[in-house]
Amino acid sequence: MSSTQLQQLWSYHQLLRAHNPELNLTRIHKFSNMVLKLYADSMMPGQLIELPSPLLDLGSGPGMPGIPLKIAYPHLQVHLAESRQKRAAFLETARERLKLDNLFVIGKIITAGFEQPMAGMISRAVESIEETLDRLRGCLLQEGTAIFMKGPHCDHEIEAAVKRFADTYRLIRNISYRIPHTPHQRRLVVFQRIDQPLFAVRAKAMKRHSVKSIESEQNAIFKNLRKLLSARGIRKQERAILSGGKIVNEALRDFPERCEAWISSADRVPPPSQLPVHIAWYQLAPQLFELLDVFGTRTPLLLIKAQSIETWDPESGFPEGCSVLVPFQDPENVGALIRSAVAFGARQVILLAESAHPYHVKAVRASGGAVLRATLLQGPALEDLPQWLPLIPLSAEGKDIRKVIFPDSFGLLPGLEGQGIPEAFRRQAVSIPIRPVVESLNAATAAAIALYEWSRITGF
Image (cartoon, rainbow, N blue to C red; front, top):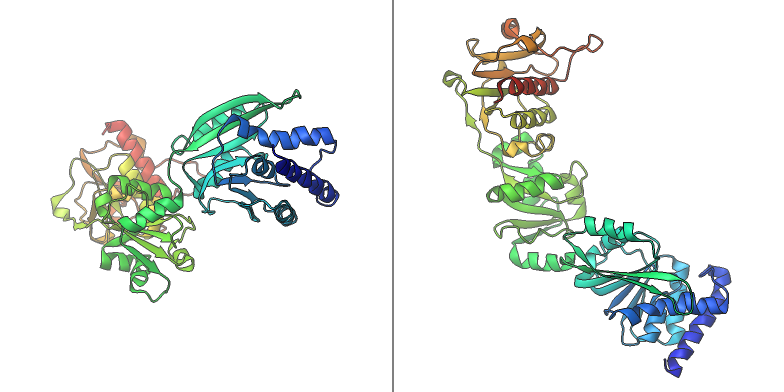
C-alpha cells in the first residue's frame, strides 16, 4: 500500500477509536487484533477474487469491509449501506475525513424494493445467506456477484440458499482461507445472479406490452375493473379478476389466450418475460390496487375472459358419470364445490338459478383456479328441476350413502345453505353419516365427501 493509503487507514483507525465509546462500533480493542480481525480481514476478499464495481457493502456497520476495501482498491465504487442513523452519520464523517472518491453512504434498510444497480454485494453481517440474497432481488445485476464473508461452519446456509434460489443464483466460489498470522479460519462464499433484477424486467416489459398507468377512481378502465367484483359486472363484461400468485401463474401457463391484462400496484411487480405480448399491463396507484385486491395478497392480479356458460336443458339429461348441480348462494361454497367436482372427475357443473357466479373473485379463489378447468352450464331454479331426473340429493335425513348404488349417469344435488333440498326430492335423498353431536355438515363439504365416495366405488 502507498503512504497515502496507509495514512487513510490510520485516519480511519483513529476515527473508529474516537467514536467507539459512544457508538459501540466494535468490541475489538487491542490494536493488533483490530489490524488483523478488522482491517486485514476486510481486505482479504480482494486478494482472493476480483471484486466487482459498483460494490454494495450490506450492513456496513462501522464501515467494514467497505472502507478498508476502498482504501486498498481505490478504483472500486463502494456503497456503504447502514440503516442505523448514528452509524450512518459516522460513515459520512469517515467519507469526508478520508477524502475517498466514489464512496457513498446509503442510510436505510436494503430490501427487494431497492433498485439502484449494483454489480456486486459484499457482507460480513450475521443474517443468513438466504435472507441477504432475497434483499438483493431489486438491485443486483444479472451475472452480478454476492460475496459472503463467513465463518468456517456455514455449509448448512450454503445448501439452503442453493436449494431455494436454484433459478436465480448459482454458487460459483467457496473458498476456505485463514487470516494471516492468526489461527482464524474463514470462508468466502460467492453466488452469481442468473436472472434479471426487477428494474431490468420492468424496462423490457414496458417495451413489450401496452401499458396503462391509472391514478384516478374515475378512470374508465378502473371503473370497469371495479365492477368485476360483483356478479352483475362479470356477466355484463364477460370478464373476471384472478387473485393469488399460484392461481395467476397457472392461468398464464395453461390459458394464455384467455388472459387480457396484468394488474399491479404501480410498476412494482412487472409481468414475467414469458407473458404473451397481447396482454396489457395496468399499473394502478397503490390505493386503487388495494380496492381490487380484496384478499390483501399484495401480488399482481390478472384480468381474464370469463368462460361462456351455455344453458343446460333438463330434457337432455346427464352424460355418463356424475354431474354436479350447484344451488349455493355463497360464492366461496360455489368455488369449493367446483374444486371438488374437478378433483373427483365430475363430467360437468350445472349452476342453478340460485347459484352465485362461478367467476366471482371469492368463488375463483375458493376453487383454487379449478373454475377455469370445469365444464360449466347454466340450469334452472332448484324448484324447477324435473322430478324424473336421476338425482342423488344430499340431506341429513337421507339414507346412508355407503348403501347407495350409483347410477351410470346422475346428478348430485346438495341443498341450499340452511334450507336444504325441496320436499319433492327428500324421499330419494342420501346422507353422510356423522356423529350426532354435530347437526349437519357444510353443504359443500358434504358434496365433496359424496363425490369422493362415488369416485372410489366406481373408479370413474
